[in-house]
Length: 393
Image 1 (spheres, rainbow, N blue to C red):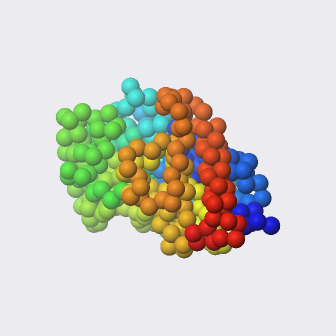
Image 2: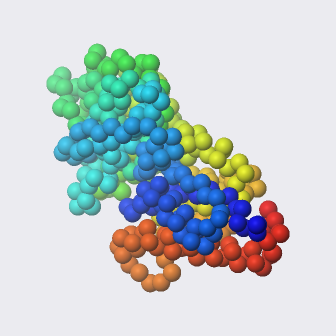
Image 3: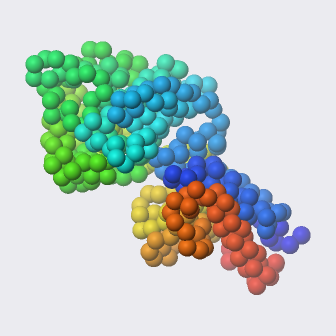
């Protein structure tokens, strides 16, 4: 049997945002490569850095139960959101974006002042009701800048204004400036014994020029004036929260991600912020899957300079190269000079002029064809080097 027939290939992409889940992307890549390398052994998993696709990636790798719940959406409307229940109910996996995400709003409806994390708090409550003792919370793609106040309301915290009136459920970032008092009498006591790991891929603090309002609120529809208003509200809110809980959370790395939900949860619970990719890798057992692999294929919707900052392909590259395994990246599009990232090969799904809308519409087909092209190039390398070579290993 020739050398390439015994290849063992691990396919481990991120989601192609707006087009394919990580699992769908993995299947498309395997389909394309199998056409050219039918005797190769493929192992496929989906990955995530804690943003979109976390739930699908974990359930694909380890199994578990999908649970649906109707919760409050980012602007107060009801939405049906899923969470995952693992380990017989001991662990829950929640994606913030399913209840409080930008993906739930059209561009014309973005509203950083009103968007709330209340629905995310409701999902945490569902997890508690299912008996979860550990909650994995992915916070990518949020529409919110409320410091987690909405989620905390759903979990029993009351925020009162200057007249001592409770601010209604569904607080957004624009309500934070009104907070004058924090009441924790009805806070869900089950959270005292629950471990919450918040998957995050940035290190921004809550406040300041690198904080939640300044950096991320403009992406969520905020004007310059609204950014300043949100900053003032977050400052007021977190000062009261820290005084109430006795914890200093505003400068915790990542506390400014996703509108500051990490700061709010860390103040009131045993929550801890963790690097999203590493957390997901532990959940899916990536280290074990890399054993004996000849080639790793990863992918994402768009590759640019940001890929090197905690994104899935960069994490896969690091782990594979530590073990001497080459890595091929298949990307929806490639922008700028990506050679410095260090991939052993980079292929774009787009091989001819096409609009972004059309490319996203036909993402699975384009990804399969790109994987097929990659496999042809791989096979050509075998012929040039000879089947008995070690192919650069």
